[in-house]
Figure: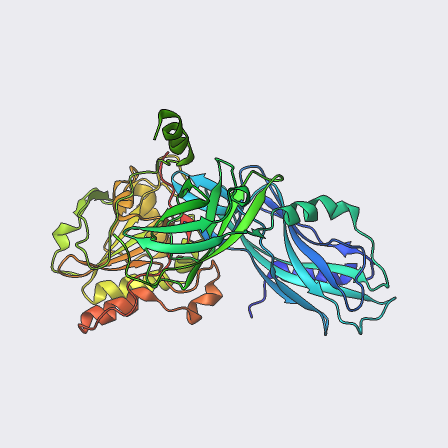
Length: 282
Length: 203
């Protein structure tokens, strides 16, 4: 791997900070501040902990969701952890939609936190401390885009009990509130000419009633990224997307999010809609 | 359906206006365009009938574009393509006042600075050709065969990133498609997800 002066600098900084008990390493880069944070002040052996990559974006700047939309790039993490520790994938909160002169991007603005679950081994010794490190790569854009990369570190004590860290409580709560909840409905998807339609059937009470509801598909090369048309019938909601110009192979199913509201008051639902494999209807 | 329920139904169908994106498709004739290049010459697609044409959407200040020019990947692909008889047209659809918008002198200075080897650098600040093709990112690649049929549209390669280190591992679609066209083989990858900065169209 190539050596980056920036990362080397961060490593040196991390070494200096290693003695501190809870040392975060906020990094201020072009148009966004980034840091690795923990929901709790300590790690408990044998339990999982909530970590977060916190982005503080300058106004009008954004970073990206797992599917970035028409352009952009999803944030990527690469962990460097002590033996026995394991970090999961980013638990993506529901994204916002950004309209940039007719191109659509999906991601996050303002103060945003991407949670990750950390599994702490039962063998971790109370009274000791560990250093967690992650190399984060992101793209931050307004209209123009700037790639960012940083090695972020966090030193945490191992303890029998852990208290909530009040500094990040609101951030973790907002990320949790924006997690898609499984919808109580049955989803099916169909190709109809140049469109892909997802129908969600369930009781009226379970279907989101927000007239400003938006929908996002996780897979790429399936649907176009312009806002879908959402219509309601008796006990069903139909989300109709333009088919992607880059659609090649039909996926077995479409995974989508329905999103209502704006941060920090977001409600999101997930839906899994098997794609009808029968002949596309005109 | 009474008036009330009609009104509700209309309210609930979120009609959305989007720009007039045309739709080009692999296997269909590529639409013609007429743009001025950095030497003041008019360039049309139709004037190159009989030759393979590569279209490359460009914004010199986009980091994804910088990955491919900063590493020499783009210039090498341009040089190889044009040496093999293809035409390479670089198109800048950045609107006036937007990042990467260039005038003729600025474009020629950029070409000289990076050592670009395209046939011509075209201006599309009104976004006409960009919307005609549905160009969304920089870079964004289209390859048109000698009969004027679109044979590839999508990303420049298979790894979406701004990192030069990813280049050796990525499938470079332009040389692959050009080689397949040359030998009369079927194009193995005809579309891929374009990746990059958004094209800086005007409002």
